[in-house]
Amino acid sequence: MKLGALEAGGTKMVCAVGDETGRIFDRKVIPTADPETTIPAIVNYFMDKDLDALGIACFGPIQLDHHAPDYGHITTTPKLAWRNFDMVGAFAHTLGCPIGFDTDVNGAVLGEVTFGQARGKKSVVYLTVGTGIGGGVCIEGKLLHGMLHPEMGHVLLRRNPGDTYAGHCPYHQDCLEGLACGPAIEERWGAKGDALANRPEVWELEADYLAQALTSYILTLSPDMIILGGGVMHQTQLFPLVRKKVAELLAGYIQTPQLEDLDHYIVPASLNEDQGILGCLELACRALVEQ
Ligand code: ADP
Ligand code: ZN
Image (cartoon, rainbow, N blue to C red):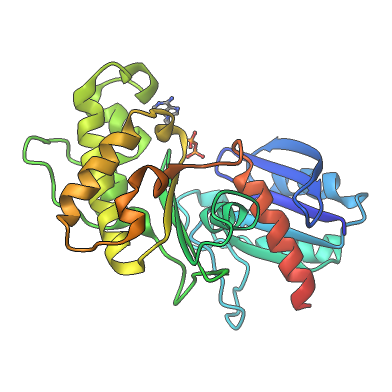
């Protein structure tokens, strides 16, 4: 099979051609400008590739309900040029192949479940901590959608008593994303995250907020594995801090083999940053099978 993959992000569009075994033959990165310039460049890349199907993992929020009139659209995104843009339509009309479509983070979790460390796991959460915070969930091989799709970055937390930073989320101020995304770290501490590597208080606080959110996901979704990705998680000192705080917050209430071995339960992404693009190949594969 010749499958196309499009990881559609707010700053760049990663396009690739591969197959159902996760081999990637070719790729191209196109900067995300407005749809009028970006979409023709992507179509142009895929046009002569003779694809059997295309999988798209897209920034959101997006419409995933196949029965909705706006299925396949990007909906209420703050990126105004892309608001209400018909992403699936743009490629279905020009490439004429089946299109798989899901959120960027569902793409990432699907990549890890299909080709990475989460193979064989029943319930997996992937959380990206970057410019924003978002989570994807795969349960028994199926990506969790529900009424829309999970928006796990916007869960509400207990604020750390010493933290006077107002929060970065335009909707909720001090939700998880508001308190712990990359731009929130930068605003609170006055420097970009990578320049704060030697400030333990920065990562103690960050780990506190991430651990609160992970504890809620553990209690609601009962994942077998939680994968943390995104630029902020390049601060690998966060992992032991988050694990310790999750254990404290759970306070022994749940006892499972997974929670006994937190080093293998709360883990970094495993596919050299290719989890998203590999997830797109699997989305394409599934779209072809469903057709
Ligand atoms: P995006 O979320 O836009 O796809 P990233 O996942 O790379 O992109 O996240 C970008 C955010 O992560 C920025 O706020 C940046 O400051 C932060 N970031 C990137 N690298 C690091 C690092 N090494 N340490 C801490 N923060 C980082
Ligand atoms: Zn929010």
